[in-house]
Length: 430
Ligand code: SAH
Image (cartoon, rainbow, N blue to C red; front, side, top):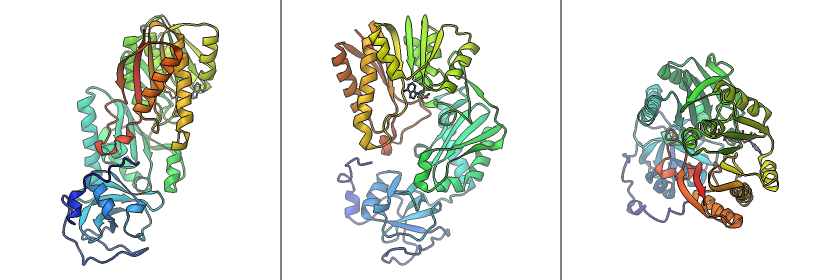
């Protein structure tokens, strides 16, 4: 999370006075030693003091404060809503506290508001209001995108009458029942699936969990993407059931589809089916049998008889297709994340280069490549450099037609731009 920007700004702090959000200390300031029993603020919430560097970060709007920026080690269990103060006790805001994670504080508000039922109800309504404006008429979208919706540690996707949620930190895990009630009430939903079976919970000392926690959820739920009807399995599917971040890109892909098309890493066919609405023939390549079966079912339900599903490793499929001299007019590459941490970046870029190079070799002149990366550690500049190098090796001249990202229901906090993980380029081979 190094943005190297801590040297800039913060001039106000040099004058030793928090500028905005600061309130008078609620107690006589004192120094903080290790394992301090936290003071309680006027609202009964414990106070957690942060260092000057932490204050600078907080005031720049960064929603995370790391353990190294805490002034002392508060004797708390983790999961609490706390008052964030500077070392002299000046109020800065409210946050969720985590004892286990390196991220100790996750910002909730810079105001001295109660962190209660109304607070969470308002946050949910505020998040949903954005989707209503940005995606009018849609009933399938990401409702809550964690920190970016000022609800850290909570992800909620809506599939019509059904919701699928991830409680990613101890604070949201402990408020799961309340949040589930509020979400059910706001959306008048019929059921809520808990898909907290994700490894990041381990960083908070939490076990994976999944299952229906409110109402009932059918085996698959249907939703539309443009002209295409899809089904997702909220219990057994990947993520919260499917990849809602690519919805707008799926629909966009239909516009470029032509001739013979190929969709690699197809999952349930989000891209493949869009391509099939315009292309002559589509080959969907997917390694998982269950996902491949769902592509077939989705193609059939949409009466798209021009989709061939191949269960294979896309790396092998692409290599063989080049060896066999096959050609395509439209190709989509949307693989899973290739790097879970920074050490794996080089290998990830090599993986991207291999598949993009092959795809460029497979395209006829005038062909379109829609290529995505959801690897958070490979940023847009690195991805674009990789594409340049792949094009050079493939000896193809390539135009960039569109540089896209996740849909509008996946907002990015300006002060946490690193969370803009999804890149999606539309290229044309000359
Ligand atoms: N393109 C999809 C999302 C892809 S998620 C969409 O738009 O909805 C990545 C998919 O790639 C998963 O379904 C996973 O099962 C599949 N996958 C992972 N490794 C693969 C490989 N080596 N070859 C083919 N498919 C793979």
